[in-house]
Length: 586
Image (cartoon, one colour):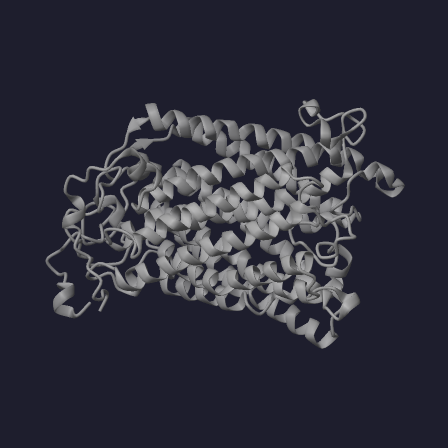
């Protein structure tokens, strides 16, 4: 059966539902409002993370020039307006932390998990609406706490976003400050929010699917969010536990990671990356699912190899647990164990390649509509392929030993997590914007934003591969101090200028997002001629989503079906040949 004893009946929810402003928009239990709250919060943190990246790039490209508007941050500047190295280390730490934990992760999981799951499976809301509300406010509190670290005495965390011990554990090291402790508390609190959300997602998908919504009639976006929720539930407690152990080392004198008193420095690395590599797929699996929905819609074809796509998602999630050691080839590892991690890392490329070829197979000979979401989805595939191919180099232990501490790694992680995830976010926001706000984003402005972002993104990050191969170290404050890096200075400046242009182009997206919210063209119920359940309700959907429980008769990707004249066949449209799900026991 697709449902359980938990009621799907939305009748009580769809009546006039009078709530105060605070209850409706601030302390809301409606999954759609909570999704939008996550969206706005994440965009703010994305802005902060981007500004930090621009300050870092200015220092790397023009280390001898004052930072523009540097007088706004006098305590972070040396005489002459140059960034202090201690503040630069905090920027490195907080840029990575904010982008991973407070921007990309909540954008992909918090926003679209909340907004889409009930709508796409035919449920009136999440299984636990109050827990859902609490998950947002706990995450928001963690974000405020993280930003407060900039205002404590001694500066914010400066041990890198991975917080490696002993730098992050020993109070005598410069990486430890009140800000480092705030960093650990914030991460632990955010972990609680993530666990609450994951429990809600899993329960909702298992118990609240509409009649006929069998497992293999679910859209790939829901499969990806469901699998991601399982990863979150298993991985986040590991990071939270490690953060609490490190916090105790700093505050009450324990020695979990103190090598001078029986602790294990490498233990932190194992705990962090045992969480950290599943985290990579927490950040990319939702993107893969949503891009699959958009590519099928833009190609007007069913997803090529739907079942293989589902099993590829499951395989990637499983293999993500057995490859964490490839982050530690430099830490000293038994060669046999290193070979095991190397082979398992290369094997994970197989299900990833299956997905890429299936996306290409979906587009092959399709009647492609290059609307803005489709452009970003194709951009995601291109960026993910480049990031995946560069990852194969690092999977090889001998090669990784040479490139691990260079800008080759910076290029790789940005192609996978920033290039891949962010293009998917732009695609998903544009695609489901009409359903969220009842308005259409401007298509012309959206296409200009895509092409400029695609251009400047590649001009920014692709040359970093060359920097890495040439030996340019990462986590470096002033490359002009090293004579052997002087020939790379023009390339560093080129990357900085490209990064500044990439950041500036995002103003187009912000303007389009805000202006369309107030003045955009009113969205029809189904602007993309899509098949999913979310496109059968008004835009934006009412409280409770569906006037009556929907019935599902087919899968989500019946485009260009020979059974109907239209080139799409909604999941809820009943044909004469369709069997009633209740009679079939579905």
